[in-house]
Image 1 (cartoon, rainbow, N blue to C red):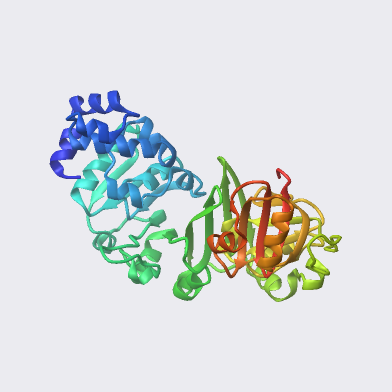
Image 2 (cartoon, rainbow, N blue to C red):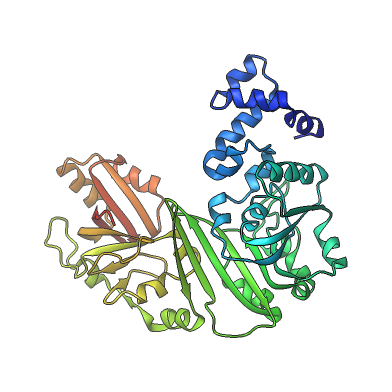
Amino acid sequence: MTRAEFEYLSTSEARSMIESHLGDDPLEMALAGIPAAVCTQVKLLDRCRTKLPDYYAARCIIPEVSFEQSSSQATGSSRRYSGRQVLDLTCGLGCDAYCLSRNFDRVVTVERDELLADTARYNFGLLGCDNIEVVCADSAEYVRTLTERFDVVYVDPARRDERRRMFLLQDCSPDVTAMAPRLAELADRIVIKASPLFDVEEPERILGAYGRVETETVSVDGECKEVVIELTPDVDGTCPSRYVTVISRGEIERYDFTSDELKAAKNSGCTMASKEDICGGGAVGSALRCPYEYLLLPDAAFVASRTVQAIAARIEGAALTSPAGVILSREPSPWRALRSYKITECMPFKPKVLKKALKERGIAGVTLIKRDFHMSVEEVRKRLGVRDGGDATMVLCGDTVYWVGDCGV
């Protein structure tokens, strides 16, 4: 988005045109001679309906690149921080600053791009936020001369450039590993948003010298969205070292795990199921000998946070197929974040035998779910000769196939 486009989109003429065309096809609008900037805004506002519903409702101006890189409103609203004032060093579209403004008296947000800073100010006005101050500056330079102290400093470093995506904190912009000593002087807590692929065991090594380090892994509707690193300067203790936040259909469930619990689960805290336990003789059509009636599928956030073993250890009598696999249980899951399936049969993964069984049972379509399995779903579907969806559900894990029914839990 250019400066000229921003100034045009903020006029009453353009806003009226956008309002009258919401829901229309942007391509048809362009062919009808509607200005390109308006067509783009109609397209982006439609995408805001689910990702940034308040931005859609206020008819904010949406820069396309900033929209792609922005947090969703669901993840932003799940943040647990509150206090008198917070410093957001990476404004961008401003969703995080907007969500933080609900829980802090004052928000200072920094954006080095002048046009993005002006766009954020304009949008905050539309959103009715009068407690957000937008500063146009380089964040590293800004914190060097800052004399104020904040309850929280929040950073969402850019994780891509023109050539590639970046997953190491020191490669992102700004480099929070270089800024950490200074940030530790400015705030009671430092919060860093990282990629969902970030290794949750790395922050302690990188930032542990400055205080207590914790991580929070957040998923929305089964997809891991982000890993949030929390650094509390000059504080030690046995508080939870990892949090898991699962957002499903607007409902939020939170789980916390101490370092001691994670170590115990990794060493001997949960039972690993043997092949004999899982599928007995293993022949198709044989009586089920698996002593477990239910298969529990951990949410993606447990897998990304490496807490599957710890959550399995909390379920009495349960067993785990592998450290990142599925949980076998005699009871349905007590939590929504572990989806329960009724096991009807299980067997070793033998494509020829499975293909014959599916044909004999008249099953042409199968819903396939995989965890810790060596083949892609597409490859398995090709080997078995089945289409997506249909009359059966199979969970593929390790070298075993579980035929399951959905418990609706």
